[in-house]
Image 1 (tube, helix red, strand yellow):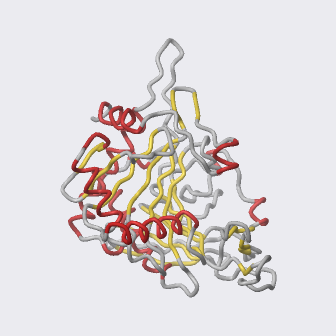
Image 2 (tube, helix red, strand yellow):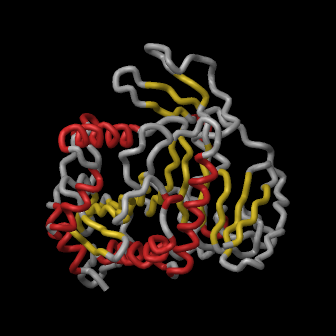
Length: 367
């Protein structure tokens, strides 16, 4: 892999990842851009202890532009974009409208104040473009391109984890307008948080409780149990296993674990990296086959989903395990799972599809 780092017109970093070691990336960004300013801050909810990011400047971010004005497509004559090159394989750049930024200018205050804990929203937000093809998707990538994306995720995890104040790095993809995607071009994001995220805090507590009660590691025991009774296993390889969790929150939710527990992407072996693309692409393609419309006016619509890499944070992450959670808000053809009063108000999920039935359906739509 060849990594080329350059700058956009406003000083933001742009990184190209190429399989060709001889690739040359020297296109310059000619746009007259003013440096962006992040006014983000993080505030601690005194009732729950959760950190909430306040980023009001993001209200003006790009919202559903037409395809010929997509900022993630390669630049063309008379139509410059965020990527100056005429073509690319995988490109990563700092978000122009970040929730968190190295130069965030927040309000003064004390992070440990008892009621109004606050601090600048320091961190970093990046956009990961999987392909130059606007009409493609991750599921359409070749295994070689998917591997290049994995290598880019790994590189970003290593580099962002080393930034001062960063506590956790999160790589993810939102796909589909139903999820809330505002740019149709196939892409993901990377967030470098200045705190440990609330869901990870819960995982740390659960792992500690399991260790105290059983003497074992929660994630190792969980994976062993799922593999021993494969009712919820969707697919497995020599190095990875995908299964629907016992208490799935979403109609179709699959967790993909390396069979060897590691804390983050940087600790995967070459054999584990080599096997991942094929399994992950198969999972994504199965998601797109879950909901097949019938009838005279039937239309095949791609399944909206969120793909979320869970990696151990800088602190207290010794018991955690790297894994990817893939889920959709679609529960049936033409029907979505909305987070209404019970889920949004009480954080108490109700799932309309049994995990065992979801796993069976995922096996049925295998290629």
